[in-house]
Length: 603
View 1: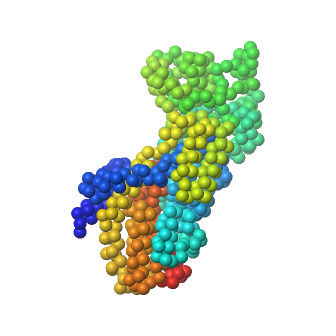
View 2: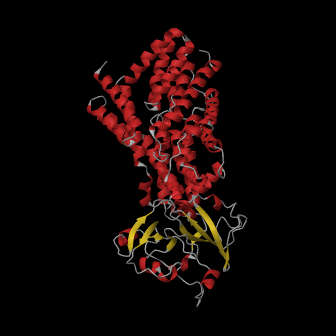
View 3: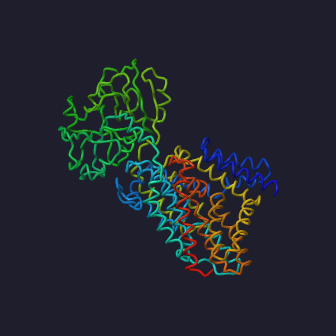
């Protein structure tokens, strides 16, 4: 055994152990492993860095921007409704991941997951479940669907090239469907049943807020363009917002309390909410629901609250984000009502909601008399935090993530760009990176996403993790470690017949794809499958088809497939989560591949 081979095997063992311990961030562990391999001379620095300049990195980064544009314009709600319907508590998981698998058969699964990632996080909030219950199924469904057609994933093209190089017909568009479709159907059923029970239930910030509530009082007015006009409280989906409920409706100066689920929403209704800050951020993004103006009288000479509410006015979001401010004991706001304090005139930011610890505030926001320790949710301009962070008026000034106002009027632009990118990447697979970059550029140029937010949309840890993993996979290939492992196992299987050889090819490919990049695994195992078939007098086609589909079955580790890495952070997953859910799925897919292939292709 060479020095490079020994070092690579040791680094591989250490890498898996470090990921399993979960003491350090996964991207840092992967990068450290790559640096050790470079320092020991196993892989050249130029080869190690190729992963960072890989076209896939630029594609994923660009798609993060396109996805952020969908969120910033509210188009993600429309897209979610078109593709997934109106999910509610009790919606079967199969209803959510089925469309993903179908789409994955016709477009690359990495950008597909990048598109669906924010949609599934959004759906998780609606269903009042942790994203950890949905994101691994999202990744796995995309991987399974990619095995059904030639264009489903790039690894299929690797095997197609190996067949042509061996002077055999290439893969047909639907040839893999004989094995891909049955495996995908069984895999999706597993994910929707047994797999769903094995998924972790990570407590995210929203769930924490619900169990440790900081309840705000919020008033939103339904403008004529509101999508909820004419719908009841039940059918509008307002009852499904986690940690938020409508406790009153003010209509033409009258206050409806309590609110019936069958009460229809009318133009200029003021909906009075009580709930947690995370869902308040979501509620104020609904098109046509705007905060009530608590500062300016709406009728000449009107002083009473009754006349004020008889002709209410809205205060459309104009700031860059929502900020929470806690009133200090020395604040001049103390003792004044929200309306009389005229907060917007003094601080340049209107009050959106109010929270008081230990007390439910259910009177009109304009009538609330402010006290020390009250927390205000304000519509803040860019410089609000910098200007007032050290003010004696406030104990704390803190901006909220993902609380920028939604540009609903540009939603059609964001959807157009999204559809164009999907069609472009499907029709011009060789130019997928260029299409994605054009889409990201148009997202910013058309104003769907402010340029200052574009760089924040790119998940740097995800890109670092994937790029480092590509470098480690390259080292496994060039050092001979992967070939060494494969050679020893194949030598063991040959005396037991053709089905045993197929089984070893499948299991070996499945194991290596958890460590190498899928394309590298397919290329390596393709060569070994051809050599084995020639030596034993077998038809290489079924062996190569087994390599094509199995090189995608990387379910047991986060590094098994790029999409697994993409959902690692957003889902709050740990290494053990992939083992618990992925190992049974790997075994199911391997077994079905070993059983089905001899029935369709002659060994």
